[in-house]
Length: 79
Image (cartoon, rainbow, N blue to C red; front, top):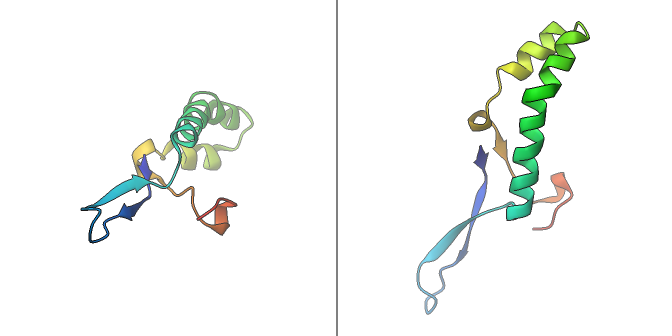
């Protein structure tokens, strides 16, 4: 899964900047767990409801095909 990142540090006396994930470790774990549930139970449930187009759209998604950003007002997080 492509979690968005940002750069921290890197001032003249602090040395090189560090690239860090915008999501806290706990958020990453929760997002990955939710994605696992979606794939394992959500898609079969949607298919069972006769929503084949939605199931096909969801089935085409992989963890690597998503970009997730836990920062910014669009997600209700803090910057």
